[in-house]
Image (cartoon, rainbow, N blue to C red; front, side, top):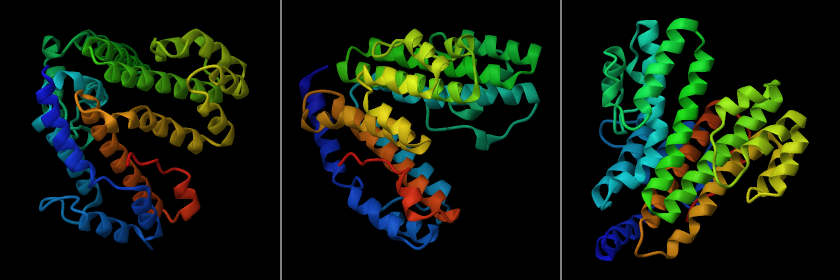
Length: 323
């Protein structure tokens, strides 16, 4: 890919970065009296569109679509962004498998801003047209549907598809040929594995459950993480202290929400160096992740205000901004 193409794309992204929310603006949103004020504040910043109106979920969805539209417009090669599209793609597969099994269809369960939107995914699963799915996804779809039809076990189906998504993300990172994409993919899988270990320890899951749920990655040892989880929460924290995810140990000891926040912040920290890149895909990836973090943070504030949480309780859950 020529440097000139990246230079143009990065210049476009730099111009858009000035519109990203700062930590100071997030504090302003926290100071709003209620969810309506929060929504109005982001709409005044240009969020949403004519079709979204004052519907909070529609506004957030509109912003997700805008973020991807920008990347599609400027990216010289969209294939390197598979790593970011796979979570929604595999979510659609999971929803389609369950809905075909149940003999029902609910469009609200699907994402449409991904390579295979909900309606198309439903038809693929319904018609057993699995050859239309990329990579190993067709095999996963077949196995997940067969599993659900024979056992009716929705949790096992979820585990199978979620694990396949993590494997696909790791593989897409390696295949991209871009170090920042590979690092992002590996961090995504590692953090997912750590979350699985934490949840499994709390719910008393065994080693086989964790091995089936976790994917292999470069930056942590799946086997060591499983052994730590079987020994208790403190052992998970101790294991993390010897890895590049040492910061997670302290937040894990603090609270579940502090740990969730650390996980997202760790992703942003991984990408902040891309602010100074000009000739690579890194700034495009960073912008997209920054937008997703921004949208997730606004959703957390809106939900918190709607449910009457204190500002401190909401603040504990909100994410660090990219800018």
